[in-house]
Amino acid sequence: MTVCLGIDQSYSGLAMVAYHRETKVWKDSLTAFPADRYVTQSDRLDAIQARVALNVRDIEDTLGRIDVVAMEGYAAGAKFGRELAGELGGVVKLALLDVLNKPACYPLIIAPTKLKKYTTGKGTAAKAEMLLAVYKKWGVTYADDNLADAHSLARAANTWLTRTGTKAEMDTLKELKRFKGETHLV
Image (cartoon, rainbow, N blue to C red; front, side, top):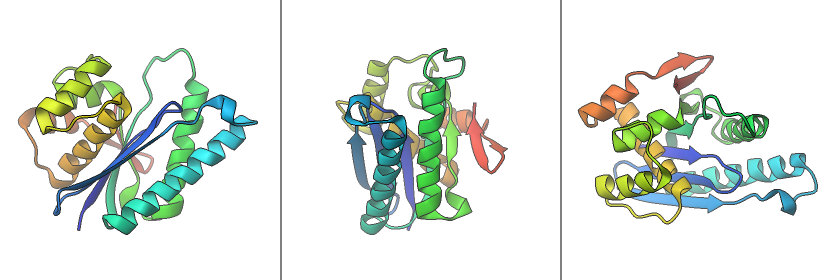
């Protein structure tokens, strides 16, 4: 049994999409963490880590063992919110490590431009283009761009794991490199 998990981490919509390769069953979740709901940023991060852990346990309970995780990387050159994005990515990784506790699941980190290229063929696609590409390419409709990105990440994880996909997909993923226990596509 092989389950691939895609995570698009965002405070406004942390999206997780899991795919069971053999049964072709998909499972997705979307949770927002607006700052005004929490007393401190630490409370917010604690809630995120707990939610990710619950979602991962639920995925493994319903679909089976997660074999590979792909997370969206940070936007290179972003001027605002880098520290908050780093904290968010860190607690997601900690939740994965805590629940999965196996090196095979250390995440593939895929830069936003590479994810767009994998999905649409170009690294500059807008959010609406990603939603449309997910529908055209895989027949899946999402109203939220975070879920579309997470879906694309789960597909990329599956392509990376199985070494099967279109030539363009494979060419994009060839650039994945190991970096301190994680695999990055920057």
